[in-house]
Each structure stands twice: as C-alpha cells, then as structure tokens.
Image (tube, rainbow, N blue to C red; front, side, top):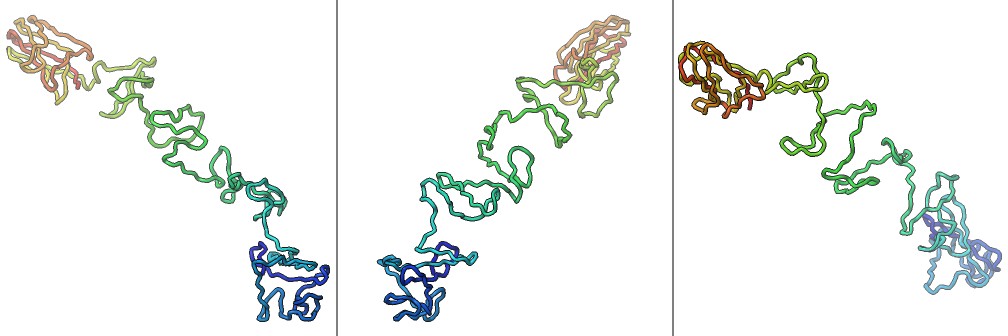
Length: 366
C-alpha cells in the first residue's frame, strides 16, 4: 500500500516494461522476471501472486536504506493510485509528495492547494486562496451568526448580533472614550422631542449642595402655584405646593401659618402678684409675643411688668392709666422672642387696680 496524501491508503498496481516502451501490468499470468526478459510468463519468473491485493502466497519485499532509484536503465515503474472519493485512477511515473507551491516565508504563488470547502461568492467549486497574515494568522470573514447575516454598524440588536460583556476592570469601551469616574459627566439631559416611552420608577432631582452647606454652582429655579382662590388645605406633614400671585409674588404667612398663631385672655383682679398671661408651650416650643392689649377698668393707674418666664427678667413695662387701654401689635415676623422654650409669660401690676384685662398674641416656633 502507498500513502499519497489521501485521507486513506490506496492500493498500488505495478507495471513493467521489457523494452522501455510498452507497459505491461504485473499479474500472476505476467509476473516480474527475476533475470530480465519479456513478460507474458517468461522463464524463471516469480510465480507468486502479486497485485492490488495480497494473499497467503504473497512475497514480502524490504527496501534497504541504500536502495538506488527504482527507475533505472530503460525500465520504468508506473504507480497507479486509486482516488477513494470517486474511484478514478491517478497515475504518477515517479513517487510524489503532496506539497504546497511555495515554502514557508516565501511569496505566495498559484495554484494553491484546496484545503476544504468551496467559495459561496463565486461559481460552485471555484478555488479561493486563504488570506494569512505575516504572523501566520488566517483572516476569516464572518458572514453569518446563528445562521443569520451578521449585523454591523449602528442599529437595534437581533439574531444576527452577538452578546458582549464589558469587564469590570475595563478602562474603556471599544470605540468610545474612557469611562468617566467620580464627578465626570457621562451625558446630558435634553428636552423630549415627542417620545411616548414612559419613564418608570422614582426619579430624584437634587440641588448642587446639601442643606447646611455653602451654595455653589448654579441653583435650581423654583416655581409656585398661582392662586386666585384659597387652595384646599392638606394634612399635617404632607407635601404642599407653594402659593403665589398671578404675577409670581410668593404668598407668605408672616411668622407662620394661622394654626401657629394663638391668643390668650387673662383678668388680674386687685393683685400685684406675678400672673401667667401665656401658658408654657410643649418641650422645645417657643411662644413668641407679637401683640399685647392691657385694658385698665379700675380706678387706679398702674404700671405693668411683662416677663417671658415666672421670676425671669423683665422684658417690657407698660403704664396703663385708669379707665384706659395700652399695648402694642407687631407683625408675626417681628414678634418678641421668648428666651427659653417651654416657659410661660407673666404680667405683674405695680399698683393694685380693681380689674386689668390682658390679651396676649403669640406665635409658636421652634
């Protein structure tokens, strides 16, 4: 058997010529001569059956390492190799190795050796040259992914695209600038041009700095609800829209909402003792005094000392003539602040009068 580069070994038929011209196949009836001479059963011929197959009568042959060429003188040996793919005969007059057209590292030359397959873009069976880089890397053109034409360029994903993974230690994304870090800007927000895609989840909008820190950068503009009627009140602790006039002037409650504005009435009868005129607030609550009315209906003029805690320092003194009224009224934002939270306000007459009516106006704050 002779291996001539096919995927399986092929049987070999031996031919010989007595005159160097006419080739005669070797067979039992026409054996090779042992001393030369013609074929066709010449004298002294080896009668052992030789040919394409062997049997028990076959003769073993060994070629030594110093064997000269098989073809010598006027005789020649023709080797016929059967192609196992289609059964055709490939005839060679001399032993042949299957090699490429050029050596490694030399310029490519035609014709190339067909490695496998045919070219789709040309006629069926047309041989195409593989492209190989100088480093020996074969260049491949991936025409399909998952049996579908490969998607390239920009566009939506599909069955012809491949999934990719960006490593967590990757400094860049292929085809883009470096990934930003820290406070670097990733993108910018633009006005919606008509997209109907809804944004789901909670979107938080925050200012440039936290409460209690110095203002920096560009502050956000704030707006308010224009109102020509009183808005519906909300529950305590609920979010509420700011109210403004139609021309954008902010509507405020001077010093606080109406629920925090309070008043208290007290009558002091013929007494010069310190008397509470505003009850102490809850823990942490200040009662800031912004108005006071003192009406003396008695027959004695008296001065009245006002304190922001029992036994505390005198905050103000008002003299009230007999059968007269005195006092003051300030805006809520200009209220007289109480020194210590959760304390009362008191009034004390310098001279006893039969009746002094005290009305105190205060606003609660923390």
